[in-house]
Structure formats: structure tokens, C-alpha cells
Length: 113
Length: 114
Image (spheres, chains in turn green, cyan):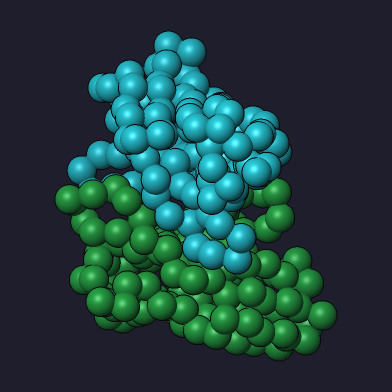
């Protein structure tokens, strides 16, 4: 199993540009999450999904959108990039009932200039 | 919502010493408390967790203690080694059925000097 994979690893965006951060898991996990990690600030939840077709906002959803058309994929969309979105983004997944352990992807480092 | 405070933000110890990281939480209904380790440039990984019906849990050199009355829990690492150097995050959550939305602390950077 590859686990949780994310692409790209790094990206530089200009203000106002758009992009999609990809996240895929091959563990058949129902739950998926998107976090952003700013220096000294821990992990902040952006969006999460409890299964295909179901998404919900986390603590810091403004400026982002998500979709969950399949169990495996949970892309994060930035429509109009702003410098405040410069961060490291982590996707995570977990199984529905057997464990609360979250499995994280390797992260995407995004810079908006 | 839940609020998790984590201290200290940086902890520097000599190899072989013990290290203790403390977290407090605000919601008395929280019942699951994981700890994650994140090495530089890597993804967070679960190292130990504890549920509210247990006061202490150990796994080799690491242990976690929970005081529900005071709403705080701590990570203890004994006989620290240079490879323990990393950022450690605590989290707290109300876990019911399949639902699980953790709130994370800000992290503690542990530096173990050889």
C-alpha cells in the first residue's frame, strides 16, 4: 500500500492564481481531512469528509473548497490564492470505526507571492 | 469548541535525560488524546494515545498520563536519544462512534543533545 499520497510536493503561486492540491489514499478509509500547518501554530483543520459525497467545514475553511467523489480522492481547491495561504498542507485519512489513528500524507509546501 | 494548550514550545535536554511535555484541554467531554511525532520535513505520525477511561499508558520509553479532573495530559520520554529530536503534537477530541475531529496543540520542539 502506498498509504496517503499528495501532489505536488512544492508549489509557488502568484496572488490570484488557482490550483488544486491532490490527495489519494489506497487504504479504503472513510474519513479524510485537510490541515494546514503554519510555523508554531500546530495543525488547523480546513475541511473533512466522512465518506464519498459528504464534506464539512473545519476551523479555517475560508478561501478553500473540497470535493469527495470517490473514497480514494479528496482534492483541495484554492480559487484565488492569497499570501495568507502560504503554508504546508497535510492530507490525512483514517478508517471508519476500528481506529482513531490518522495517517498523514507527506505534505505540500505552498508559497503565494 | 475544544481548546488545547501545549507547553513548553521548545524543550532542550541532554541525551539520557527525561523529557515531559504537557497539554491542557477545555472540553470535559473530550475522551481521546493522541500524541504525534513530526521529524523535520516529514509527516506527523502517531506515537501513543490514551482514552479517558485510562490514567496512564506506556510503550517502551514513552508514556502518557491523563488527569481528567484537572483536564491535562502529559507525554513522558525517558532515556532520550538524539533520534527523539522532533516536534511533538498533542490533540484532544470527543470521539463517538465513527466521529473524530481532533483539536491539536501548537507543538513542542524537542532537541536532544548528544
